[in-house]
Length: 132
Image 1: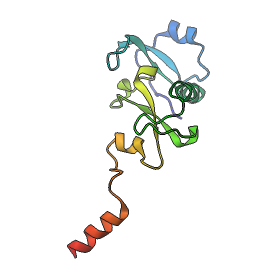
Image 2: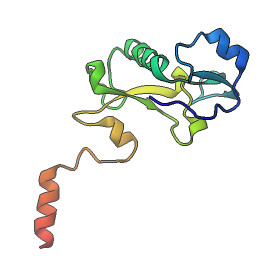
Image 3: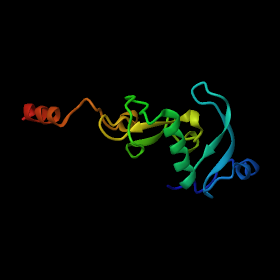
Image 4: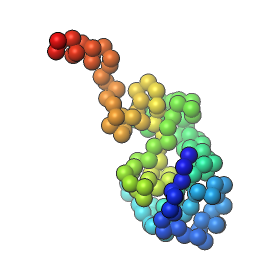
């Protein structure tokens, strides 16, 4: 996992106090609120800190996908930033994170509009045949 090449608005004291495992992780001076949650300084995690965050989310959500509510093994869930646009909006605060499955319904890809799980290969093949 990579980290920001240029750490924006780094709060040096808060970053040191956080005791991060990865040198790429830091606390920002930017204060935000996600989806009506509490205001907080944004966190940007890398490496072991990102994996630790995913493990914490797995425990918090009891292994359930935020999209389909099905329970999965941790290896079949992707960590998802609910606000995911630019680098600075991808805060790693727990209020901005959830887990989405990457198999079956593939809720993670669906969340990012990469595919529609209701469209099957058979439907695409039938459409292609109808056009010919």
